[in-house]
Amino acid sequence: MTDLTSKEWQDQIAKDPKAFIIDVRTPEEIEEGIIPTAINIDVMDPQAFMEGIESLDTNKNLYVYCRSGRRSVQACLILEQQGFDTTYNLLGGMLEWDGEIVQP
Image 1 (cartoon, rainbow, N blue to C red):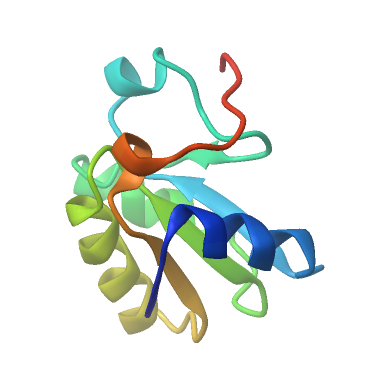
Image 2 (image 1 turned 30 degrees about the vertical axis):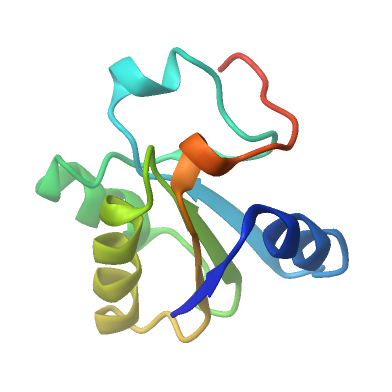
């Protein structure tokens, strides 16, 4: 897992053709908006999270975020245990995000 600031995250995703963005917040939290192209897999629902990541391509570079950056660290660690080699955590989560946000 690599921690990235909002600026680093945006710069890296822009040049990463294998980027795949995962929002690990709760359904209630995503109502506030999500990063474009992100999919939501709630890490607070362990069964749904494990089922949600089963279909993901282990060759993708996973960019993971939550509200503040804590749950996304947990999610990155779980993803790595499940065979995903390249995970990036958004430092500060949505609280520090200064990029585009869209409604889900």
